[in-house]
Length: 208
Image (cartoon, rainbow, N blue to C red; front, side, top):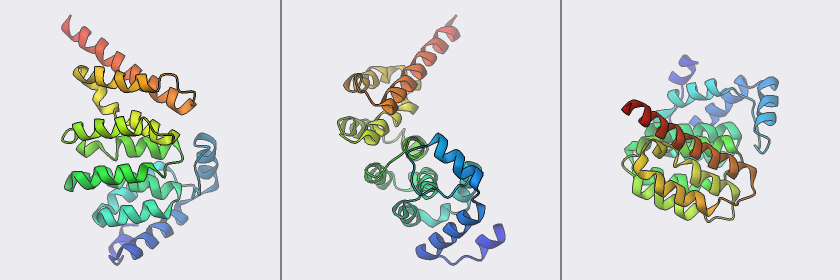
């Protein structure tokens, strides 16, 4: 694969076409069936394992924001998963653009895997320098009628569960959707609560 990458031309359209070719080559029915089982709402699945997606993210990170936007707009499950991972790798180059794209992409989310990858890995490189803006975005999206935007709003707070000083703000957002009947919202709430509880226990134990 490394030789294939070296021979690639560098226009976004050509990079996208080559990524799609590699995804087709690496796909298999077993992986496709597994994705359909564990991520039932996903659409247009190639059937490529996550470790292979991770390799592509490393190989194509020089494609920049234009490539990850093209991947997202192309719309297949693995393409969007890769776009989210690429955003995390280059996001610090332009934090404002990264936050804008995360907001823009959130409208199109249709499954928990892409949602959570975008919310955690996609924003990982800017979660410290854009804490205020991320919380503001969470407060906006938590009010959405779109299930996945509400989950995105919750999950992008996950890195902050390690900071006890932010727990009050996180619980304030959880309260907005505490009676939400959607399964994926309930699971996100449980995830955040569990992480905050674990961090509190860990801090108590380190003091004794």
